Image 1 (spheres, rainbow, N blue to C red):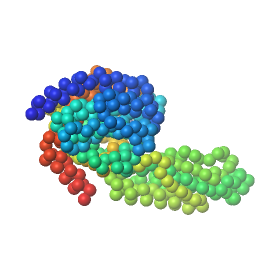
Image 2 (cartoon, helix red, strand yellow):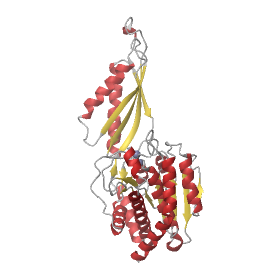
Image 3 (cartoon, rainbow, N blue to C red):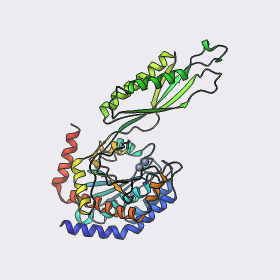
Image 4 (cartoon, rainbow, N blue to C red):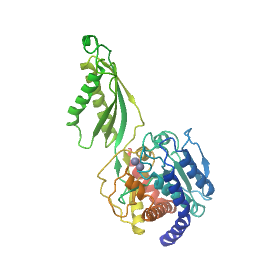
Length: 392
Ligand SMILES: [Zn+2]
Ligand SMILES: [Zn+2]
């Protein structure tokens, strides 16, 4: 039974590979920043339409987002694959979202060739702007996942890493308001908004030593005054505040805000704060689902690293993982070399034969995992029970 599916899936993946390779290379050649991914999203949509998906594009009023659906002839669960295709400024696809998009969209297409037989519905979501204002947040807040049973997103990396954790994050800006004055002649008539801002930074520095070791608070001054001989009446700092879970993030946010209030108070200024980018929740890996995927990858000859990743950022997949059972594993495209993401070296790895072979195996693993869930109701029940348990 399992062997039959493996051979069938691998066969479909092989057939589809030239089209996916073309998609990845087209996107590599046309790097577009978040919310400007018009060519990249269109290329995905055209391929999905060609393979019989019904596509809503734009989706949720976002011009570079899409929702592609293929409904099988028989009833069954709904599985969603999430594609990204935004690039980075200056270095193009240094995060490898060109091959990410081809892989996740590819898995959706391969599964669509089988759901008429096994049942179920496949959804491929085009999720813009992962690097900045990730629209998985918009989708998790909307009704996108209401009818979805399980969601997958896989990311290229220099290791085959099992789905782990990511940090919850809030992007907060702090604005300080003072009063201008001649800095030499009448400084006593001014209120120094830059001093308020610097007080704030110093406050955060003292706070930092009492934070949990995994917490991160880091910021820059984006507007710091106009001229040295004018007491600045306005300054603005942008911060990221990160924690491993939402309760601690909520606590941390309040502490950081109090540092800003204290900074303003000491300099006799006013302070306002607000969000300047979307906030990301922490990723909660569904371990039942993750184990199933890892076993499928193992059966394809890929050993998944299950120790936690050393470097951790924040991702919009976190928000998805808190509304639907989800995994976000990594696949190795660097031919055994250690290569960090967000580099030109990593970008070049996406074009290699090793990367395409990794893409093929990842698509097979994702598809086989979906088939397990569709054909064995008890596994899906277990996945859902774990999800319910986490949010009790
Ligand atoms: Zn990325
Ligand atoms: Zn990235």
